[in-house]
Length: 153
Image (tube, rainbow, N blue to C red; front, side, top):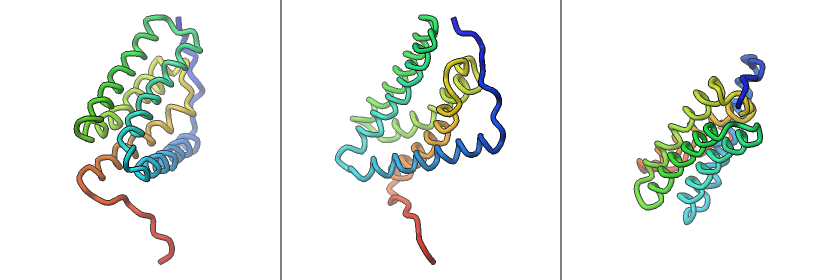
């Protein structure tokens, strides 16, 4: 059984730093995924499933109840199902899955009872990583080229 031993609240500066880390890492992730066009879809889908499985690992390592582990596995099923659907269907399934994943990160694991075992160094950057990934997939799905950073003026 989990006991509510939430991490101390983050300062605004710490929270912002973790969000920025997620933006940077998420941006690098999608840039790398799209750099391999033949495997982009599988990479984006596979990492989504891994992101959901990490919460199963956190719960298992914390000695969570079988009921809680079942809930975490349900999340893997939901996000995995959407990822699988995208492999043979529309990329919008994948964009939707990545856009919904912050609910899992924040509502259940940062602010909710999953905060007893999911570390803030994971949940907070995941929020921005997931949204960057969802946004990039959506941007590319509507046919826009990948944004390119301009250096100089």
